[in-house]
Image (cartoon, rainbow, N blue to C red; front, side, top):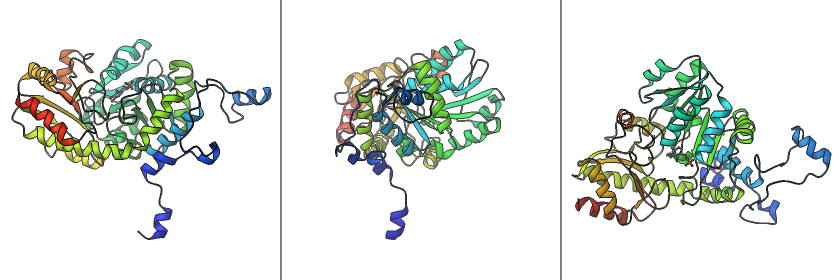
Length: 400
Ligand SMILES: *Cc1c(COP(=O)(O)O)cnc(C)c1O
């Protein structure tokens, strides 16, 4: 690349994650964005306040809908995902509910993949349905079943890829193509991949959702959510969803923590992905492992699709032992470094048992149908030295 080309190309992802939307010169030279710990904002004049309420003047009014620390975070996330606008929320569930409550009306249909985070599954099948919204399920790894279930009433199509907890990978461009025929909006939960590994909007999705609690924050010390999409959709989600219906605003302090997490997102995902692959390769060869799902393994059923749509494969692995649920529990209890905990994407390596924990809300029969076996374990490979992670897993497996 010549010097001229280098100067004209867009800034890289880490550079934007560190600098975009903030100039120290505007804030007494402070290198790090200040935390605007205020609930409300003073109007210069009574008329200025009224103009802001009428949308005729830019500015901050009240912390439920907008705060300057939050604005920096939102501009950065919009840029990282390649969207026009973003909205920060108090949790991933706050992001999903703020979007769905602003997009869906009674009588509308939402079509969702049958493998999603347990509380997302409950939100669609047990909560939204109380308000006259029809929720249909399909196996999104088979686009023909999506084409069969989708119709004129389908307003929203929702899925995760890779999906929680079993890492199924869904063809974002393929689903977006089917949804476009009926004008349904495609909402993708990009929590497992993050914009470092996968950018759904570039593949035809309309909205990206994150649980920022996971990789974006990355340190297991906050809950948060993010919505990215067109300016229109995000404005609607903020006005109707966040302002009136959920009130799920992210506190300025947590915006600051999330901004801090974003600065290292790319280098963390590089390490998570390298260690994830090393751990997956060790597990795949171990005689006590019955099945393993990691999109980066050549034996993964959708490995080719994963390679097309992701730049690397992250730190999440799902696996089963050859001794069912009892052996899974025994393995968890023998681990010394790997921590028994739900959540994921943290610096610490975490292990959990979906059937009794994150996906307990699914019925046993539903779980079986959705590929979440009773013995399945979900491992989130952290940032410790990979040899220590491998040693701990091997000592626990060998002792079984
Ligand atoms: C954790 C999680 C959520 C929910 O996010 P919270 O921040 O816990 O509310 C949504 N989707 C996925 C894929 C998740 O892992």
